[in-house]
Image (tube, rainbow, N blue to C red; front, side, top):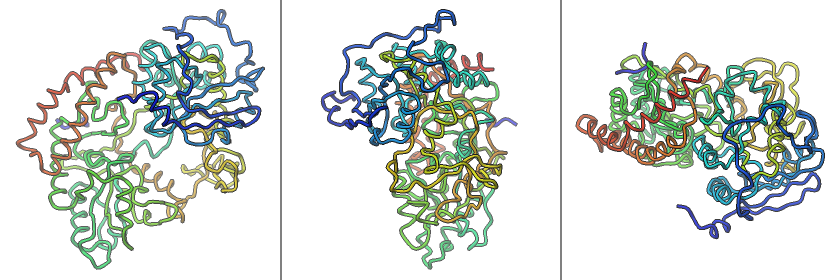
Amino acid sequence: MSIFKTKSAAAMILANMLVLSACNAGTPSSSSTAIGSNPSPEASGTPSTSSSVSGETFQSDPNLNAPGEFPIVKSPVTLKVVYSTTNDMAQNYAAQYISEKTGINFEWLVAPSDQYKEKLNLMMASGEKMDLIVPGNNASARITKVEEFKYASQRMLKPLNDYINYSSKNVKALYDSDPAYYEAMTAPDGNIYSFQTVHTQARPGTYHGTASYKMWINKSWLDRLGLQMPTTTEEFYNVLKAFKEQDANGNGDPNDEIPLSTCTSGANVQIDGFLMNAFTYNDPNPNNTTPYFRVNDDGKIEASIMDPQYREGLRYLNRLYNEGLLYPDAFTQDRATQTALNESSDVARIGAMPAQHCGYLVASMTKSDRWMEYEACTPLKGPEGVQFTPQPHSSADVFPTGLIPSSSEHPETAFRLIDSCYTDDLYLAINRGEKDVAWREAESGELGLNGKPATIASLTVPETSPYFGNMNLPGFPTVSPTIMNTAQEQDPKAPNGAGHEMVLYKATEMMEPYKVPMKNVIPNFYYVTEENEKISSYKATINPYIQESIARFITGDMDLDTGWDSYINELNSLGMQEYISVIQSGYDRWASTAK
């Protein structure tokens, strides 16, 4: 069956906003400097437009030992790393561990996540000397493929092809083991400029992220009212209606229940996410390069928000809103406001909420057990039998990292540093921290989320540790040759939030049969420069109109019968068909080379 039913601030001001942290950690050393503090007048060198050397002509840096050997360098080298953090990097455990093992010292050019990209743009434009760009994991600091290739098109990044071919042990071995790595990370000009996480069958990444659109329903309310977990949109409506009318939280006040709520910030909280997929496949994730788009069964790009069945989904949401089942503030409240609302009395006030995880219902999962009242339901079946959950494409993540600027004075050393991160040893230091303080080897009988024997187990870092809160290097590209299976509490209801990961795992496992076919998911491929510019322009005008219209249709400010054609016409007048054409060009180019 087809899944488809028919400003930039002045540099002087910016300098005052930067985080400055210059510290000496001895030798090997690590220091932190505010991004943009000492820009050099111009970049030293530019990248080639293709990988053009052979094994016979590639000239490796004579200061480097053989690929895969430690230390990496024969004589100490200092790399300037552009990183997003507010931590004191001179006191970071992983940074110190890597320095001691590799012989590489670090000068950390740091900025808070909300200032990172603006500072990075200034540095790149000025040609400031830097060796490695690692944005970190915060959403506001992440670099997209669009931004990455824009830098590359302006010859601001070093291609990594030759380093992978002739100066790598670990990265090349991993990439050669699965062509998906090359496929996902090769830019339109044939070069690789960054490292990215690739989700393969063997390495699925964070499992609960493969089915992130979940609906969390208060199971204690269902039990109190003698109701079953809903399986259809009509059953869900009836559950919400009972929540509203029958004092579901049992405190004697029949008017304080909020049947359905959501918020404006957080993962997969969009009101047209989980529920809309009972009417038509729709992925509104704003982290996607092109949210609201999909591939039909004929390989053509479609906008889900123009589908007549999307209108029927909006009609359903409008029904919930009109009957007081959808909280009016859902379109304006942030996550903190929602959690405060749900914890404002001795009993829960929210009956259901869409989100990636149920932690959005409490301020702290370790200090409150209220989240345990909630369980995820399966994707709901709509009136036409549609029952899907979106999934990300199995290609690379959206966010590149480990970029080497053209201004780098030690580009091959920077590459070798990343190559060394693709070992079990550095993977654990970067992602876990200090052995026997932040993690330990698993004991016999300990199991991971998948029920298989664990390889490692997490430990609670004591506040007395000199690295407390500063153990890891989030955002560094790293893959372990050994697939790590972390020991997990097997009881979902274990106290202090210990069973939360098991809750997410079981909820995601339940959604497996309903995942939208991968062929209908737009891959995270690269666009050429002209396409990137057009996409940025269209998103800036079209996406806000989409979001405004969704809210207006649901609240009744726009009529779904008399206003739908005007909505479609306005989308087209803003360039929707041209937008679709640009995405189609990129998709066709990707499809012609995908294996």
